[in-house]
Image (cartoon, rainbow, N blue to C red):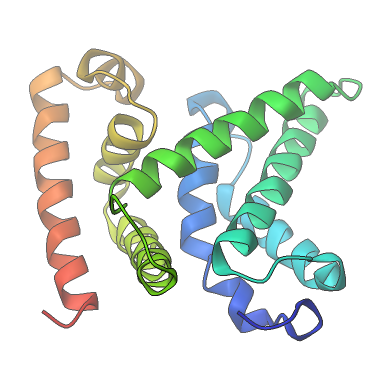
Length: 190
């Protein structure tokens, strides 16, 4: 990982899909109609680039954590503007915790038991590749996979959210995970 002063736009944009998945998980159906996760991600990356001199980390994991924090604040700001409410620090902390929780679930998909620094770097690379693959899924599959595996939602709740039956959601999960495996194999050259 390059020094903070050398933090490039390219280094930041590698996390676009990762941030989009995390943002998408936080926006429920009512908010999705009014807010676009990609706009919030773009704002997050722009803010990170503008404040790159403030980044004090040295690893991709630290960069990802810094970006998640900016994303959580941007989500809170966007929701607050929709509600035209005063600043609610509890909402920001709640969103920050939710983004971190989704990120840790995402991370557990590919985490190893014991990691050396090189294994951690490989895991971070796979995490970015996984986020890119999730972003390539059709909307319904992406929603089902992220809600089930990142948010830990049961099929019944996902079915209500997506307006589908539980067997339909199970099919979306099956097809989504199958496609994710294919995309990951392609990305990893396998």
